[in-house]
Length: 233
Image: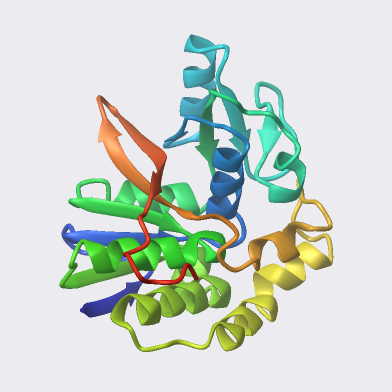
């Protein structure tokens, strides 16, 4: 499997397969939303688009980065979202980097969104699909976010069977700028448990697949079967 790791601005053309990584916090939040019963997540182009979708669909749950704001129901925090019952609901998500990265590769034949919490399921799906070339979109800090790069490299290692040691990659993420900013309260709309929740390895057994549905980019959970005779990670 040929792999490359690019920031959003470095993308040229349309990759065949893209894994969009945002550990802190967009795709950790998305995984928790699905664990809370959400049916799907609509990835919005802008906060204005998110509010417009919410206005047309009042039953949808709109969330954003940063502090609470009028019109939005939640913020982009796994610690705050984990106790919310989202059974059967549609979530509209707009974040600074994660949703932007997924929309940047929306024409790809396969788009996966990931963090450490769904790392093994994501790698397993790449293996099962027999992907020859995968572009990992490192969304944070213009492609330099250590937590996103570490997670992307870990998933790539698992997908190619190199036996990557999870501990080293998780430690890199724990020592990242994003982790420090969350811990120190620099980033608004956060919960004290956010960093720990973002660093939980394989917390959920599903991958997350984004695809265009009508005019929207929609993220859904995807159960990845464990091959017969293989022990779940």
